Length: 137
Image 1 (cartoon, one colour):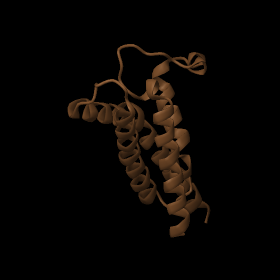
Image 2 (cartoon, rainbow, N blue to C red; image 1 turned 135 degrees about the vertical axis):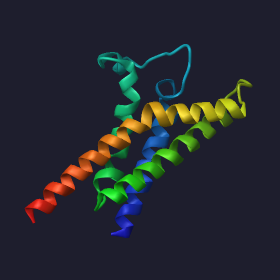
Image 3 (spheres, rainbow, N blue to C red; image 1 turned 180 degrees about the horizontal axis):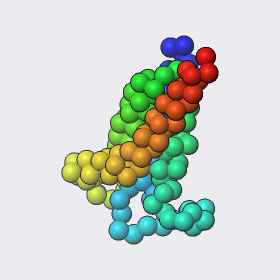
Image 4 (cartoon, rainbow, N blue to C red; image 1 turned 90 degrees about the horizontal axis):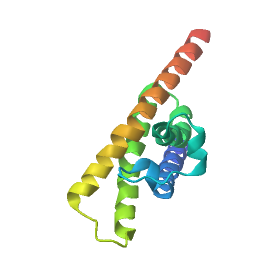
């Protein structure tokens, strides 16, 4: 069981980190945004990053055995992946826009705008699923 949790944790962390790096314009705060074409199909571009985050967290959130482990793993993924992605983005920037305050601001912006709602939604789904399974047994 421990091995499966580790694999799903690493998978979700890698997926979220790659998604943040790949779609920086959806995750990072910017005054000018160049949206991908598929985002224009959504009702609002503000829901694009939480949807991607939910999809990235599904292995970690729904493959674990209990709600406590789900919350712990999704919180860890959402704390580590944005940090890693923002650090990578700032290291690879060609302009000189790196500052510690900007780094902290972008990290907190991703946590609040892109990760908070997915953590709550997936924890509730896992709780409801585990509650229904416990009632049926």
